[in-house]
Length: 589
Image (cartoon, rainbow, N blue to C red):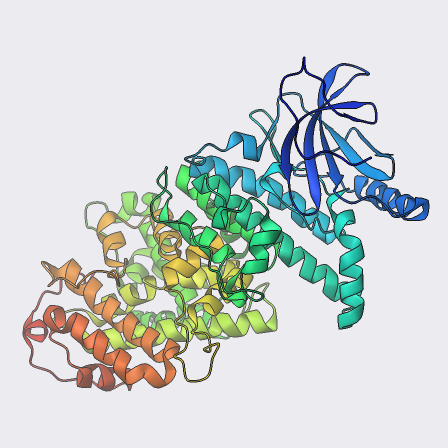
């Protein structure tokens, strides 16, 4: 007996049998498995059957397959479809699933694809289940669109975990033995292959078209790097508009650089979940988790010794506001805490109503008093909070970069602008980065890795450029780092004028000449941060990077490459440009 690959849809016509089942329609097939719609005559209900395309060689192999399939049955998760039964017919294993109100994803996806929100939600459900299976030591090995069950009520789940891997066991085991691959290494490889296969399913769900016009994901994977040279990316022209962050996530999942892809189902799920929650604005993706963690461990940990110095100075009888402000300014965690306290609705309503945002620590200290400074300092977590040693090193580096940009901004500021204000604006333009490094340390490491250039695959060719920060943030978290900083600043009570200043100038658009003092502060801080980014990320290419930054900001700020070089070295440019002559200490409060 051999399971047929196709049959007529008319139930009244003679239909082939598979054991007691009457096969109605082939829902999907690959080189390894078949997915059939069938009737179970025991209760006259529809079933979905998943079976391998190859028969067990003998009874001993069949028993081993059935044992493995029943072992997989013990791995239960909402993202994994549970078969009603696992059995065999003439040495063919099969798993039978309830049809009920479900359809397969291949049936559900129309020619235009699914709306991005629907596709992302379904993907997260399946990926969560797949990650659970991988944690249990199981891989699927043949994920296809026809293996995903879709229900309006229950969402999406993955079929075939009990069966699909059986079809690959024989070949994989022989290949692993020949290559000397151990069980753990093979398990990791199979898990990564599952993620890539599901990325191709996501490609189909979003576009309505199979990648390379092949509906077998294994056939597509064989043509992609590292075994082939074909590139899979979402087409620019699709039946439905695909949001740019979602496009970035889907394209990273099938990136031609194997190192850039998602290596676990969980990381791909987090990126998709972060995007669809933020996009729907239901609960803001990772933002509620961030705000909850901030309540538990604070926004940032205090740098070693700084909080104690500030608390000790605040106990002195003689009020040294300027000296205390200088100490607070050296620790972003304490500076941010002071701004948060003084700009909350309760404080502002009682003491600074109508006076605009407070953007100097001198003013914050005057309003909160020395007791307020001491309480703020003592409430901060000691360095490094819950971070591990490597994670704390990365956070410290991010803080040092933010502080460097703040010092550069002070040196580049036009005449008449308060040094402390521009310092704080430059620091706040790094708020999202610092929060991600503290609260999402693993994700921050992934983002930095995606931003770094990759060595060329062939000698003599230029290095592959890294992703822009926004794209890398979308690819890892499904949300832009700047949005995280903006949301937290808004949560702290900072008003729209401050929110405008702490948004960096877009890298994709020319820098406009400032129209007012707020714009001047924003542009100056943004220029300083770009200088530090160039020095940090571009290494040997820093001179060319500084040249590009100078060209971007020349008209707006009147700066030259020499000005930027001097400021980066801690020296005042001492220029007499029109921007330098602009006076307007509007934010010295």
